[in-house]
Image (cartoon, rainbow, N blue to C red; front, top):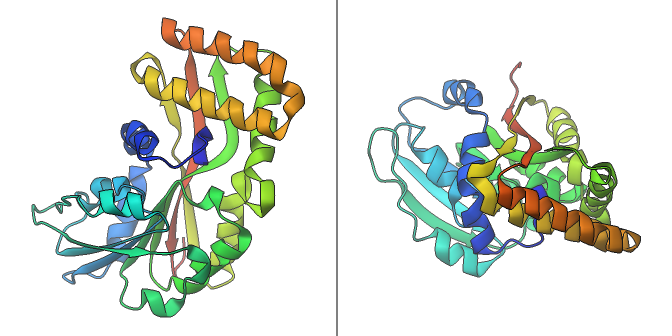
Length: 269
């Protein structure tokens, strides 16, 4: 799972929502608005929508009528997402529908009429084939946010930081998943189809005010590392205890680096 947790449960998604909102690269919104057709209703596909957090963030930053199509393979998350109340930047209620299913079967015909394709914390948990499917299907602008890039910084440092991080990155690449290579793969896939890609940093910066999120992230990050490299187990147990103690004391700062991508078909960056 992106950013270090081990499952896409709704409680984790709720816990991370404010950190995601603070991290997203808002400087990409200006070029995005410029690329969208003025005075036309927007049809926005949110791939891997989860509980709809990206829609709650983005709908209020775009003007005009909006219809959101929320797509996820998890029916329970879709049930939560369809209860959202999206409001546009000019105060209009947006309409919402939901679609179930995996991304491997996504086709260009599915996205006919789309004004924008969006996703959050998704690319790094996809395979190259799934990223290719998105790139092939999306003939409109795409805003793809919060993809991890394999850089984590913890302060104060610990001798085990680098080993845990390397094992976690290897875990993200298991079974053909792209993990930290996702942005590069997506940039290449969209570029081969004539699109330009702009990327901007969107790091989580977690301090004492985000202790609950930091603690949950730590547990998932270390668990994934140990699953990948079981020999880390005994040392990782002590490492996690130390880090959780620092988190509880308010002395731990964590930066988890991501990139946001704005894809503009057939245009120059």
